Length: 437
Image (tube, rainbow, N blue to C red; front, side):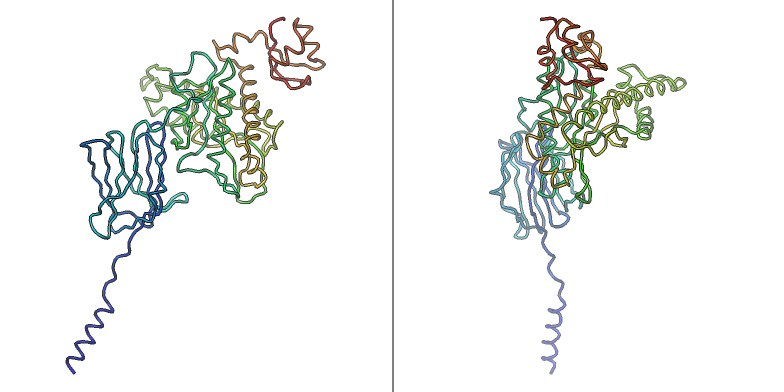
């Protein structure tokens, strides 16, 4: 009997034994190269438990990451590096049977920045590794800061989202980040083909740029205008149409307060002038307020000009500039606008936004609006300012033939110089009058 009781007791202990800890998983590996860094993301089933070390004795240099109690579910044969820094990612002998060891082979000596991120923005648990350094081959179509020429009108073009941030996703799976990058590239190409203008892409490929850094990048190249390009979305598919957003008064006031507290940025905004001492802080506030007011008023005027052109080629959701508290619209150094090119959540508009033909039309409309604004408000020293005397604002009763006769030129020359497809002109339209033939 005692033996039987002992056997039953043993079976009870087995039944109540503590279960083995469930394993974590690496479900996916993603990589986002950018001009300044490469980000490698491991999508995890649970919060990662990990350690790492580096082997820098010879090339390729190696970053070794050990994942505790983790299975690799991702097929590394599918991984292909598109970064100048990362040669490949491979497995190696793990610490034990329940662990996974991954080796990131690097082309340069790098000090990684590693962090664990919890679920956010549609993603689950992640281990994120940032590898600083030049990671992309230069896009020959995109001008670098060094390529920009003195006193060409400079437009900073910001393609929204990018990298891990896809933006809105259409019903057919179209990513906002992909659509707006194509429109931004097309717009940059048109601007760079204009002898009086040049474009600078805030992001030229599929990577993310911090929202607050985007207008700062535009400020560092002394841009004359900042244009951020997006595609709108809503919870229902019905809304459609383009709109443009500019900085709200409330956000402008709060930004001005932060700026006055940041002496380094304040010096930049005041064109290198040392900020005034405490007893003269009202002078700093007055100067910054004037610059902010000028940027907001100019932004409104530029947005109105672009809206007019967009209305000719697409449906409009809002016909006037809308005010918003957006991080990318916070520069005091230049007018800024955020262009919503349409609703990607609307099936019809998603199909339009994904088509190259419509992307080109949107880019052309934005270009013509921007050009029209700078014809009206040319920055000093630019080609637009030098040719200002040859500008003409169309008034009631005027036609191309009347203008050609008045300025001793031809209808054909005026049409060609202004890229006009027809001889129809409208009141208020600004035309450049070419030199007499």
